[in-house]
Image 1 (spheres, rainbow, N blue to C red):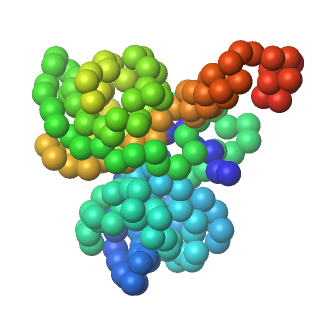
Image 2 (cartoon, rainbow, N blue to C red):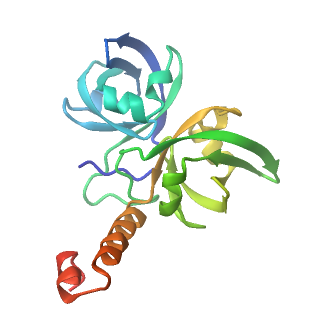
Length: 214
């Protein structure tokens, strides 16, 4: 499993889309194409994709049907900008939070307003995602690592500084746009463990050992 930081490396540009019956083949312009290896992982709008080929200016990636169903990649058009990040290397500084590139849900922007230097965005989410979110918890939106400013009924709010708006595609988002959401990895593990604890009606030494606590 590739790991990312949620710090957008650059904004790439879609230079080609070839659609199959249930899949899509993307051609993406990027400044780091010469540094890529075939088989390497790149997060595209927060979605972990595999580099299948590249030249000096663009790289290529296949998007399978399941990914199209669960993300906003199927909505991309030629000329669209996308957030790009290469996988974290061992020993690199971690400035965001651990992001896997596995999208949990697609949310919809239902509110956007300016507050001082910050832009506040409210995102509507499916009810099943709410269990993984915490106030001031980490969240990845189209691959960008952010902090949840406020949890609302069926939605949450983030506050974006000018740098984030400029460095990512989040500054281009409009009301009604769909956005890829990945909840914090640690939160998902904790929620899964809590579920197992509830099923077992308590915490046992075996359960703690099974999950690496002892």
